Length: 478
Image (cartoon, rainbow, N blue to C red; front, side, top):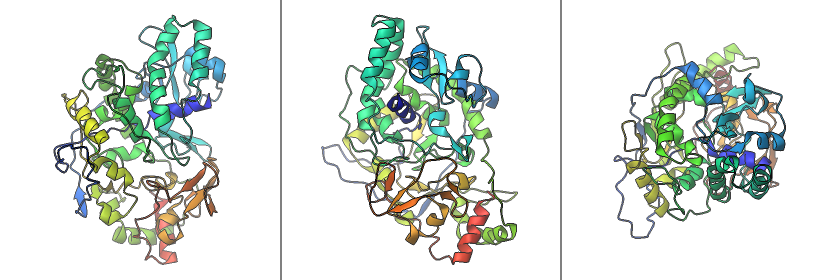
């Protein structure tokens, strides 16, 4: 059931696609694509917005045991296919004690006990063999079609329960999502996420107001997948916009629950989850980054702090006893990193026209707690709390270490890593990797592909080797 697990990963990167009145004016849709809108600003401050408050403890409980996903695999069928998991990393009890940490055992609306994915599919992973909740899962492998196992899984459920059973009915919404998403979310390299494309596919399957499944997709979806990395949850408390392209504005809870589109079949369930996610948001804001586990040269770090303050703090903020973070959206011309993910939202394609309308005028945007997405182009300069643990770097995970971020001339065109959590490089600050001369396997990151580029952010190139080491030593302290 490995491909099934990969599909679950795809559902939980919590992305939304939409627009707002502050984006560039759209031309009438005459069937022609004018290309991406290139922003002509340098940086734009992102305004803050009031967020709903909640109970962090309740939020954690709902996150790891809640029924926000309402369709999935019958519980006994899941155990039969996967066996009991004895790690119990979250110290859960009951049915959840013997399934992996990134699944919840819940009751479907018809009363059937099912196993469904939780948010930790994409937002928790191990580093140095320790599970870190809130750390983006950079071991993901979307290089295969996650619907490949669907026929075998379906046949197994029919064999166990029968095609007229409640168990088969509880599986149906998930099954249909898997059929649609799997073939459309295949990436070129392991480690990146297909969340943007997943959201596009899922929205094409549902009525924008009732969220009920359509008899067939409303539009045709292309096969191209623009990859992204998964940002750390603990950064959320500082940011005025969600996601690398900063499109997620206004109500964070409504943006976060877009992942339920894979399993719900009515708006009433969405309303229930929406209320409970204000507690989940409170929990996410309570998360702190992991401490750097190795030694730090305090004298060198002090030197690095001075250099960082002079060269980096304007965009990335300060981290003293009185920290600051400017929340700046940086234009593509200024940052120079791979533009494909940003361009996805500023191109007047048929897909974007449909989904802008779907989110702006449907339940997710047109309600009291509506999301609002601003597609201005560019990428947010993120906070750097816990940056040592968040390799690989950039919005597409194209750069394996901080040393390579600070020296663009040294970035590999092709690189392969082991994907072992204990294969961390405390010298370069990131993942140990092998520089390749070409693509060796799906585990090889190929920066020559569209959306996978390593270019841009050359602001550290003029640092001396000693100054670069000092900045890296300081970053260990954040």
